[in-house]
Amino acid sequence: MRRRLPILAALLAAAIPMTAVAAVPDYQRVISSRHADAALASLDGCVLTEIFVSGMDGVFGGRPGPINRQGLTGIGLRQRDICSGAAAMGGFGVHAAGGGGDLLFDGLGQTLDPLASSVHFDRAWLRADVPMVNEAPGGGDEVVVSVDLTWTLVGELARDTGHLHVRVAGEGNVNSHQNTLMGDALVSGTVSMGGLTFRFSDVEGAHLQQVKYGCQVIAHPGGEPDLSC
Image 1 (cartoon, one colour):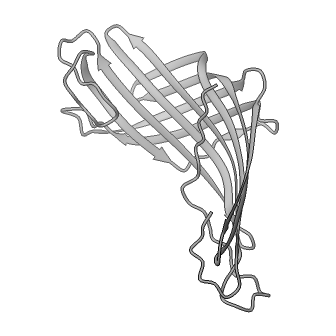
Image 2: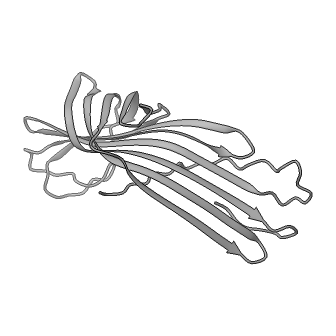
Image 3: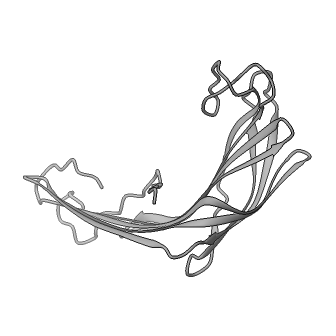
């Protein structure tokens, strides 16, 4: 099974413990997040629409200190006229000559809408309205892409665990652990853009993933550590 380990980009540093005498703190960081992704495609005549969706809901922060909750929805949408002679291939926002048809729409968008999921993480669902700009040649217009998708786990979640202990002489120790669950899923629902609605039923190739990660930096008293999780 292909492993994808999306990691939150921001963590909160912990406050200095009240009992600390020197200005050398111990840091503890924690992440617990759930993710879902899907790659969808729809062909209407000569127009091929490719949609890439990811959703996340996580908690992160420092101990001691505040724990924050964060959602994130990302959508990439690309449309091509596969019957045309000219071509515009490549990644989102990148156009190059080649076979494949004229690029009609090419956009990326993100919002802070969270992924919702069941207690046992055998189902997840995402409802969001995501604005994006058409970066295809001759585009520039802004549209809103609406997603209403549900993921259903296929089989069971596979577990992957790990621990890491690093000692830096004269500075301190870094201890971390991670516990990851991941499984294949079927995705169903709709994606809408303008007057178009794309409907999907039990599409394979989607994934559900849960990540739990903890890290602690223990600094040596009197040192000047340059350590981080």
